Length: 470
Ligand SMILES: Cc1cc2nc3c(=O)[nH]c(=O)nc-3n(C[C@H](O)[C@H](O)[C@H](O)COP(=O)(O)OP(=O)(O)OC[C@H]3O[C@@H](n4cnc5c(N)ncnc54)[C@H](O)[C@@H]3O)c2cc1C
Image 1: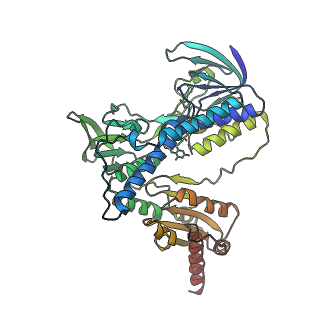
Image 2: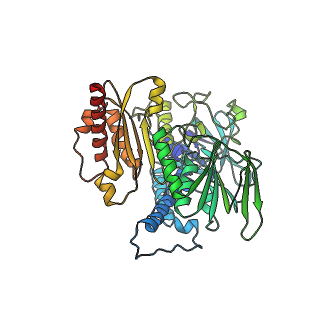
Image 3: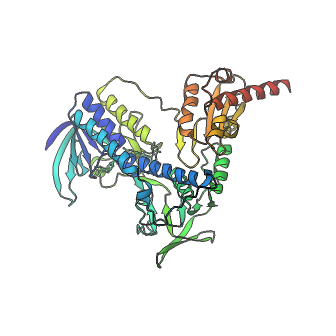
């Protein structure tokens, strides 16, 4: 039995930041990670790998569509996903080096194995053989075990024709067609990435609307762009049966409840994720996960035991790398009363790294209609923007929503090139309480996409003026 001030379960972004925050405060910290590497979903199997593949897909798509007629680009059928993600290993390696360096600089002790509660202060660390290797005692314990793709029992994930969002990065050959079940953020991102790589993609979703939480105008534009990429939609439908069809190579058939029969080289199932709480021995300490394996916590990320915190994907929404890190830091600051900056998380920016990107913060038109708040909209268009013309960016939109009476900014919604970066200008305006006049009177570099903020604000000012005159 080794005693620590803090024992952290899971070395993803939530666990890593909790461990470093505690170690910086002079605490003795143990971090338990069941995989061979730290970094979790962010570095190894989710955020960074998928974004690296997206860059390759955008590059390939750009080459195919933007080059002069005289230059032809051939993409070999034999290219594999790992080859396409040629930069991934380097990026991941660099991230892992940085994480390991900071864990070792602050003397966080890493234990490889699966952590399981024996009692509210004791963790047994199991090796791959299932045997207990050692016991760790912690005054404070942080559960940061993340989440895994849901795998329904009636689908056989053979990693040859049927994949989830983790295993898809190890596709053994480049397919020509793909069925994606689940049009959530991850499903939409992967559908657009594979369509840009030239696959015939069918996106199946139980919901009628694409990404219902996104501003409807932006979601409609995204749907149009995805169609242009070659994505076919099957909406308001659910798989009934998934079959592997043997052949060389084997393929997959999906029969839906509405009677659609879809066939493709591979199926990517990405409808939902479950919290990694099974096997943690939580029943021994009276913590009960919900049906999706998620843990309930209070505003300070405490479970029913005040000294046991849970952060990141295992507590559910918003389940982002950025928020998981901040929750890890906040949990430790709360445990030890450490002062420090508290990131504003009540209004979050969201990014969907599809091709094209979508990013937003604040209210949508639909939310304001529901609240009965009068508003005015201004739009800046990529095709009217000189930088958009220079880089040959296809269409896109910066949409700003202002309160009709005060002209205060309420929401920013962007679809187009680098939307995930451009959103932060809007976030800063929102946080500063800026109004349309302030945004319109800001001078931007020329030519930049940011200049679309000025255009959108000017349009909104004009719209309000015309509304008053009418
Ligand atoms: C395809 C994909 C794309 C994504 N893209 C983005 C994006 O663009 N932007 C963004 O912000 N977020 C993105 N995310 C989400 C982001 O990756 C997660 O929100 C984030 O990694 C969650 O961090 P975490 O620390 O809670 O958990 P994880 O990163 O899942 O880490 C948990 C760690 O705990 C370990 N573990 C689990 N159980 C045990 C145990 N019993 N004992 C010891 N160790 C254990 C796991 O091995 C893992 O290393 C994406 C996710 C996916 C799947």
